[in-house]
Structures are given as structure tokens and as C-alpha cells.
Image 1 (cartoon, helix red, strand yellow):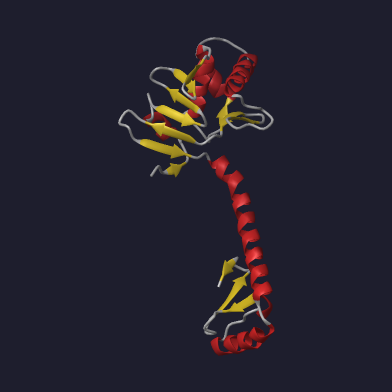
Image 2 (cartoon, rainbow, N blue to C red; image 1 turned 45 degrees about the vertical axis):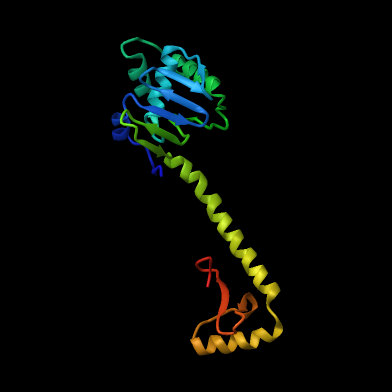
Amino acid sequence: MIPTQQLDSTAANAATHAKYDFGPFELDTEARLLKRDGELVDLAPRVYALLEYLVARAGNAVSRDELLDSIWRQVAVSEHSLSEAIWQLRKALGDDSRQPVYVQTVPKYGFRFIAPVSVENPAGDKIRYAPASVWRTMVPGIAAGLVITAMLLATIIRASLAPGDRTLIRELATASGDSIPDSEAAVSPDTTKVAYIDYATQRLM
């Protein structure tokens, strides 16, 4: 099993000369190559360096100043050079700045690599990192799915509840001391248990 967690700067430093997988891409930092589905993707040296720097810090916002200092080092360039390199990188990845899958713009700050990344170090260990931004995107959808599932279960229960069961539900509720909504509950075949939706916890009781 591949553990999932957020890639931080410590892990990034430990993953020197590692292989990164994201989407259909494989980034080999030792050979300094990027492949897509096994095919070599041609990148200019600084565009490659930019990709490697961002991928190694996946999930973390990296400032424009940090990128300029780290990628261009002692060369005096303007932010236009960085913007051009980002444009070339997105083009190579097939990414869209308006709906990014890989490189996200952090307004008035810099950029963030947002795709889940699998890292294989020289020892052969493989770790899958899911940037926090990915989880923030997924959580609302998961919660909505749970709510919809609970509502569907309640509908099924209401549809299957016979009029005669309501009296039995009230009797079982009285005996157990529980507050059970008889309009959204069903009796087990042996008439000893009641199933219903607890909307406070979104659980089938």
C-alpha cells in the first residue's frame, strides 16, 4: 500500500535524485528527464528546473522571488522571464492556467504544484503525496455524497414502511426510550429491531 500525505520541504530534500510520477508523467531528477506515457517531453533547462523545484514542493506555495533566486540564481532577470517559463511549462504539461491540474497561480505571491505526486527514492521506496489543496477540493464533494446517500436511504425506508409497522415502531421506541421518527423508520423481519436515519450524524441507526 502506498501511504498518502502532504509533501513538505523535509521530504522534498530527502527525495533528491528521486523519480516523481504525476498523472501520465514521470520526472526523473537524476537523468533530468520528463516523460509522458514513456515518451520524452522536451523542456528547456530552466523550464525543467522550474518543474523539478515545484514538484519537489508539491502542495506548498512558492514565491516568485524564491523561484527567481533558485532557478536563475545570479542572473539578473525580470519576472517576465519567470512568467514565460511558467507558460512554457504549462504548455508542455497540457495545463490551463484558468483550470489548472498541475501548476496553480497563487495571486500576488507565486505558484503551487497541486497534482498528487508519487515519489520513488533510490532505495525503491514509493510514497504518494496528495497536496492539501487537493483534499480541500475533494472534501465538499465527499460530504455532499454522504448527505445524498442518507436522503436516498430515508426515501427507501419511507417507501417500504407499512402502516401497521408504525404502531410497532412506537411500541419499540417506548420500550427502548429512544426518539425514533416513525415516518422514516423500518422494522426488521423478526420485528425486534428498528432502522432509521439519524440526521444529526447522517448515519443509519
